Structure formats: C-alpha cells, structure tokens
Image (tube, rainbow, N blue to C red; front, top):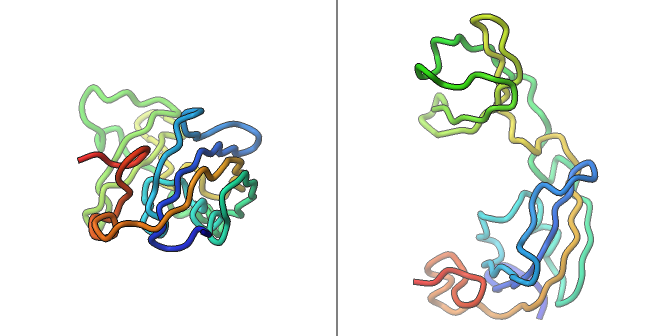
Length: 160
C-alpha cells in the first residue's frame, strides 16, 4: 500500500535545516499519523510521503512547500510596555501574542534596543530548505473511527 490521504502511516524521521537537527522522532519509536490530517508533522513532510511505500526516504522541501518564505512585514517593533511586567526581554526569547484576527501566534525577540523590542513573527523555519531522512515502517487503511476522529489510533498514535 502507498501513502495517501486517510492512510495511517507509522514512521520515524529526522528534520535538518542548514545541517542541524531541528526535529526528530525518538529513535525506535515510530509515530502513527493519519495522512492528510497530520497537523503534528513538520511542514512539507506530508507532501514528501505522498505515494511512497514502506522503506527509507530522503527529501529536500523548498521553503514554498515547507514553512513558506520569510515575510519582512512580520518583523515588528514593539515597546517594552507591550510585554507583561517582569517578562524576560532578550534576543532569542520566544513568546506568544494575539494577532489581529484573535489567533495566537508565536514570535521571537530579535533585539532589544532601549524601550524598543524587535520581534519576528515569521515561523521559525520560514525561508529554509527542509531536509528529511527517515523510514516508513507501515502504511495501512485507516479505520472509520480514525477518519472520524481525525487521527491514528494504536501503537504510535492517540490512545483514548
């Protein structure tokens, strides 16, 4: 069976960006995902897996198919007063803020210059080529219950 929408896929993977590991499944502990609905997978991985069978895989995902291109308009200047009292305001610190539509978004502090705080609300992997290596251990038909719930059950999946 090949990977396709609503198939359950058990896999292990390592995601590297610029040669550094940024995400990986625990070795020897495959995760099970419902393909096409796997919101917990890193960007671009589902498209890499589409049509593949059991076995090893390698793939390079360009930014436009991964986390997207960087948007310079998402690098913003905020005031110290915009942050909660006592918040650690140092370059590299991550925090969440409420967007204009009420959605909660992650951001990182890029620099602190006096009362001005430069933040970057681009996804951390935006503009990056994603390099995947891994192995697909199993591909099977999803049960009607898994499709209804929107996730895989059983080994490596959700238990409830």
